[in-house]
Every structure is written in structure tokens, then in C-alpha cells.
Length: 336
Image (cartoon, rainbow, N blue to C red):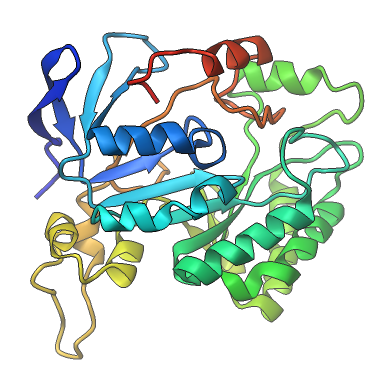
């Protein structure tokens, strides 16, 4: 059965009861780095039982989101260190989680100005993996970007520098190629860089990169995947990813009955060999609100644009620094 929407619930707020939704899966977040900058607020809202969310595109009336039925949180982050010590509290609430951890090496180009040093981020990756298990920490190198100085070969060297150190601490590497023309703010911010002439990949460069990544992976043996990419790179051992991944949830959290029921996997569907049959069921949960080539299943994304102080030059969710600083000072305590 196709997904028909989240359950509607009544939420008790400081201003009285309101109607909201109660998602099973929370995405935290495609819009901002909640673990890095909003851990305290996030935990406050978890304890309160709900948050307010405002659509970044039409700024309509806020939507109230209840955590009453939440079984899974997918964290997107470049620096999970602030939340690591609080993860046990989240588990005590009966909520599962895994992380997509973007670990790039653009220090020389200063494209990620407010991140901790690369070696520190690598150590944080290891620490997180050792705490929650490497199957629950996915490595993203995202976006892949070229310039006058960043060639395909140099980019592969950057990935090798990171991958050689962290491949024992994860099972998967997810990549995506930068989209500059699609986002006016990304093009504007990259154009402000006085050096570089940053640009997107051409088809031949994508294939050259994929070939090089396949060679690197011979010693890592990671699952390789692309995020929301139309390019077919299966011949290089690179599949299409789903970052909100029901199959990962089935592997890592099969003991959570309520989550498995939502995924359509309870009782376990098996074939004669005893192998789980999950693809067809999870495919029916595809998130139709994402791009056509996105493989993610449904989730409720929380967080807001212009609220990430990493201030990465290529980011589509930050429009300019002044708006980010203003939003970070916003005192609406119910909004994340």
C-alpha cells in the first residue's frame, strides 16, 4: 500500500491545543546541521514532544510536528560531536537513529570556513562509529566540485586522504556532484570567491572520477552510491542511494516492531532461503516530495534554511551570512 500521509494528532502547546502530524521517521535535517548547532534546542523540543516547522519556500503557517510516534531519526551533519554525549538520552526515549556524516576535504579552498580541522572531524567520525556501530554512520563526500585548481585527480587524492583513515569505521560512501546552475544563491556565493572558477562536472569527468573511485575502493571495500544523481555509474560499482533508507533500518533496527510494521516488514517477509524480501515493500514508501531520482523513503524533514553557521560556500540552504546570523538569534523557542 502506498504511503497516504502521517497520522494527524492533537498537540498540547503553551498556547493551547493545535492539530499536527506524527511522523514515524524524522529527517534532521536537509535544511541545517542540527547536531552541530542546534543540539540543545533539539533535545528541548524532543522533551516537549513537538516542534514547529516552517516551509522554507512559501513561509506559510507553521506546521506542528509531534514526536509521539517517532521511531527513527536520520541525522545529517558535518560535525556530530555536540550530540554524541546525548545519544543515550534519545535511545532512552525509544527512538532509533543513524547518521549521514559529510566529511569533505576542502580546507585548502576554504569552502567550509567554520568547520573543525579535518583531522579533528576524522577522529569524531571514528568516535561516533565506535559508539553506535559502523553500519549506522554513513560517509558522505558531498558535493564533488571542480575548479581551476581542483582537478578530478586532485579530488580523488582528497577522498583517498580521508577514506584511508575512516573506511574501517563505515560500510558506505555516498557522493554527489555539485549543482551550481540549479541554485542562484550557490552560483552567487561561489562567484564571490576570488580564486577558483568553481564549476560542475562534465560527463567525461564524471566517468573518469567514477573509474578512479572504483580503484580506490579496491582497498576499502565500501558500498559506493550517488545521492540524487541521474548519471548511471553502476558499471563502476556505484549505485543509486537512498539516504533515508528503509533497507538500512531493516538491517540495523529489526527488533523495533513498530518501525518494522511501518516499513511493511512485520512479520518478516522471507523467501524459501530465509532471506528478507524488502525491496518491493519499501519502494512503496518512496518520498514523492523529493526529486525524481532521489531514492529516499518518506520522512518529515525538520530544521530551517539559513540557520547553519558552517557557512559552506556551495550550500543551497544558506542564502547569505546576514540572514543566517539573524535566524540564529531568533528566540522562537518552539521552532527548530
